[in-house]
Length: 192
Image (cartoon, rainbow, N blue to C red; front, side, top):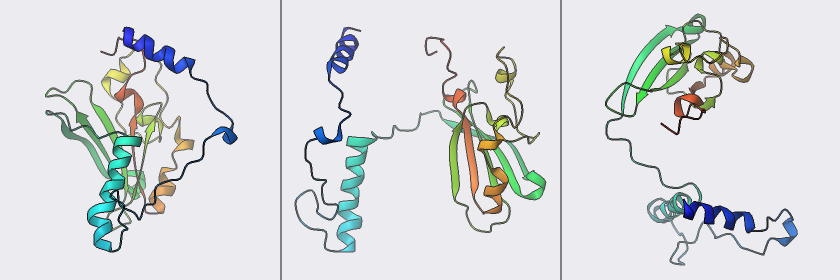
């Protein structure tokens, strides 16, 4: 607790810079020069050495390292309709469980275009009202805990203007979404 308070006071004490002219000069590293200073001189140098160096820099300096899958993580296909959207797409809903039990799953809603024979590139995004809100499709599951939460439930398709599902299917793209509340329900429960 003391460390958190000290860290917060340090951050608050730093002066923020909104003036680009005050940013000190810097040179970005050359992507075609390896960490040891040797130039990338072949495809093999790039694929076997430099590419992994750059990916490691992103993992350690920008994004952070991906945690390992939880030991008991498992999946369950809850529904699949190969003729969704009047035959335009396959709708699949998958529950992701992070423990041995089946409490508090993360539900993934996917629409995969039926007009492709090869794999479809996929757009993924979190939604903020529930999977059922991205499209008026009556087949989309509304989880029991959402129905019984006591909170006002958005109507089916309430956010469909933000999710052009049919357009994406017609262009050959798949779409997947997860309700952000399945990750964190955003109410004060002490992060239980």
